[in-house]
Amino acid sequence: MNNASQPLQNTSIEIIENVFQSQLNLAVKIGDSSVKERIQKLKRLEKAVLESQDELIKAIHSDFAKPEFETLLSEIATITSEIRHVIRHLKSWMSPKRLKRFITIPTLSGEIEYKSKGVCLILSPWNYPFNLAISPLISAIAAGNCVIIKPSELTPNTSYFIEKLVSRVFHSSEVAVIQGDAEVAQYLTSLPFNHIFFTGSPLVGKKVMEAASQNLSSVTLELGGKSPVIVTKSADINLAAKRIIFGKYINGGQTCIAPDYVLVNASKKEELLNQLKENMLSFKIGHELEGSNFCKIITQKHAQRLQDIIEDAIEKGASLICGGHVDVEKREVEFTLLSDVTDSMLVMQEELFGPILPVKSYDELFTAVNQVLSLPRPLASYIFTSSENDIQVFSGIIRTGSVVINDVIVQYGHPNAPFGGVNNSGIGNAHGYYGFKAFSHEQPIIRSTRWSPIDLFHPPYKDLHKKIIKTVIKWF
Image (cartoon, rainbow, N blue to C red; front, side, top):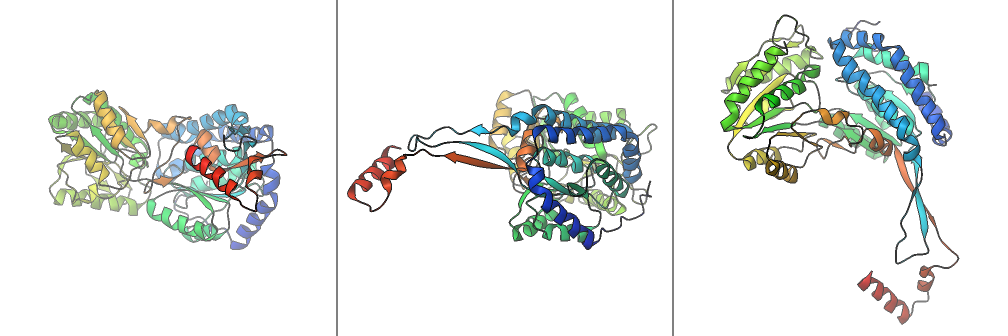
């Protein structure tokens, strides 16, 4: 196992070009593969993941001390579950879909076939370094593509593990792992991939999209944003607190759909703060609590950023309910609960991506919803309430990647739900059928007959042509 402090070696340009060309040469053949062949590949991938679980757990722990259970839950179980879901449904997904006939040209018939896009690039992040590299790979394989994966350089042990795993299952001319830093990623995005799947920040997502536009490559961008939680006066406060804390706790808060801030009805603010604090203690996630099992922050730079955010909030008048301790050198940030926050504070301006939870009160639900709408569209929005009217108001007005009622982060585990953002929080969807579609081109096959109504419109054009088309315009 490589030491986590040892940087990854950049893959040479020569190797990248050779791999890319070999995949271009093989793409048509891979795209023509059968359901059975693709399922066999997915089964080999699943087998390799199951056989190397212990090695993966050690790799991720070496990178940022992720607890074993969290790796099993969020890195391994999600992947094996997704593989099995795809295997169960792939035959149906790949089957051509018949087109309904259209009244103005009833002689046309047709179907939609799902064709592979070709050679695809997956740029995966550090926060779920295995899951977010392999999950889109599953979809790409299901759709019949060749793939290059560029995992994060910030999790070198896991990135080496991914390279080793992939090389066991696939030849590099079908699936390859390219290692390196931002310069390598920049070079990769300059190549004419048929599709680029990127998971990361909106800032980098813009650069990826700009680079992809030079080759007119299609993109899926899984980004982030400040995902709000609204707690209404009719909510079960204990349930809300327990679930919010867990959603913020897992992975050290370094989750794109983690609750980023809480807007609570003023009448329930003190009760919620007390329950949040109690649940934090019961989960044993406070600083130096006996038995604490809390993921580290990925780098000292990220830890310093979180410390600056906490200090900025306190300096500007926020109340520190609990937590606040940061050890930048050890990359440890205590779960921090802040109240009396204002929009002028960094904690309410930046996506936190760490174990900091600001809580702000509101008087009317529309006030809370307008606060959310004033910010760029988030990847997820949560509401805790017992009022069906509140649910209808919230879900009807909000524009977000997904809405979850009386829970947080669970949407990622629903295999039949599209996962993706909107505008600032992303473009396109992933997982299950939606992941299969992201890596596929829906190609219509249209059949005509020996006679067609269109034959009536052939030139030379006469008054009869005008009468016919005006009738079509008026009635059809």
